[in-house]
Length: 266
Image (tube, rainbow, N blue to C red):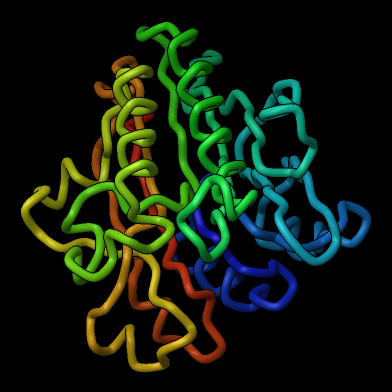
């Protein structure tokens, strides 16, 4: 399960509720907003997540991978020369005998409010981050079972926003971002696993803004959260789901979790 929790401590009871009901083997969290020393490790241990890798900072950003299964952390990468706590990776044991999936948890920069590289350094930084992901994707072999999840902060398709005609000028759905995202997907041979379930012609959302409290109920969302699979992962994928009902809970994150089911016997 992958989820931008928008503060893991604020959303801890909700994460625990999902952990107990859905019982995912692995949790990938983004925007944890907590320094490593204050991450609520004990709570996750109580829910069965003994294996923990966290990379955070106080107040913003931060990612974590928490698992019931054995994890082997991979070296932390510095994306576009920064250390801003946006990516973790690990090998996760999915079956007895050591069979593993290479797991990547990403939190791509949001890009600020103005869609101009010249006037908005945050927008430029986001595009440089996506370009770095593209270069990295080109280096990956196709055979390794590899899963990339997280808040990638791009609504890629026209049906990933509730109103493309008004959203295409907005950061998160500009032509530059969508084109950069597409290059990254093609470079890695990634499969958009949620769009295997939900056809590209249909609306599909994972985020509903806080600015308009009625956005969730009105179905006015964006899709910013993804599960991307390598060609080598395809034989293991059973299905996916976006747990959108969580957005309707009291005091929710503005994002909904994504669940990926893998067949450990295959």
